[in-house]
Image (cartoon, rainbow, N blue to C red; front, top):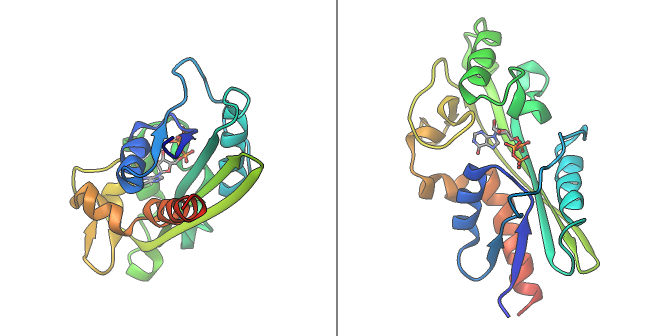
Length: 196
Ligand code: ITT
C-alpha cells in the first residue's frame, strides 16, 4: 500500500505547493469537502498546526494526519501579522492584508527595518505518533507588490539572494527555498526513512 497522509487544510494554494514538494512517493489526501474547520484559536503556529491535525483526527482514523500553520512575521512590528496572517485586515483577503501591512510600514524607509520571515510549522499525528517539523525563510518586505504568482503575502516578500519576490518566481523555484518546502521536505524524509 502506498504511503499517505491526510492534509488538514482548506487552503488550495497550500495544497498545490505541498503536493509538488512531497512528490509521488507519498500520497497527499484531502479532507472531505463537508468538513468545516473551526477558527484557529492557538497562540502559536505550533499549537495551531496541532489543533488542525487533531480536529481532522475526529473524522479520519488509522491514517497519518498532517496539520500545517504558517505566516509572516515582521521584525520591527514585533512579529506581526504572525499567527493572524490569514485575517490580518479582519478579512480573509490577500489584497487587503497586504495593503494594511504596507500602510503600517510606510514610515520604515530603511531596508533593515523591513526585515521579515515566513514560518511554517507542521504537526504529524496518527498511528501513535506526534511529531513537529519547522521551516523558515528570511527576507524583506518590499515597498509595493511585485509579481503575479503565488498567494498571500508573496508579492511583497523579497528573497535577498535573488532580489525577487515570491510572486516573481515560479512555483518550482519557490518550492526549492520556501519555509513550507523546508518543513515538508523534513516530513517527507522522516516518513520515507521510517517506511524503508
Ligand atoms: P488552513 O488553516 O486551512 O491551512 P489558512 O490560509 O487559514 O489555511 P494559515 O492559518 O496557516 O492558513 O494562514 C496562513 C496565512 O499566512 C496565509 O493565508 C497567507 O496570508 C500567509 N502565508 C503563509 N504562507 C505563505 C506563503 O508561502 N506565501 C504567502 N503568504 C503566506
